[in-house]
Amino acid sequence: MNKLPLTRLAAAIGGAGLLLSAGAGLASAEPDLGPLVDSPCTYDQAIAAVHAENPMAAQYLDQSPPNLQFLRVFLSSPRDERVNLLNQIKNNQGADQALPVFKQMLTSCVKY
Image (cartoon, rainbow, N blue to C red; front, top):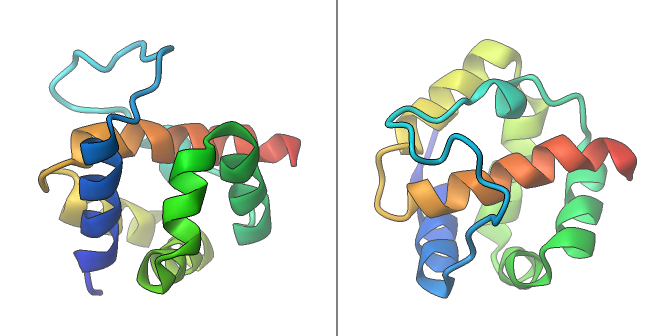
C-alpha cells in the first residue's frame, strides 16, 4: 500500500493549521486510533462529513485523487488492514495534525 497519499494530506492539513479545537487526548503520545479503525461509515458518508464540517480539508481532498483513493481503500478495508494503514503513516510529518481531522471525519460521518 502506498503511504504517500495520506502523507500529502497530513502535510497539507498540517501546513494549513487545521487542528480540532475539541482535541481531548491530543497531548498524549499515542493517539487513539479506535474511532478510525472502527468507523462504520462509507466513503460517501465520510466525504459528506468533511464537506460539511471542514471545508478546507474537503477542498484539498477534492483536488487530490490519490488521497481520495486512499480514503476509499481505507474505508473498504477490514479493521486489521486499517490499523496497518494508520501505523504506516502515523509518524509521518504532519500526521499529528491530520489524524484529528481524519478522526473527526470518521466519527461524525454517521450523521450523513
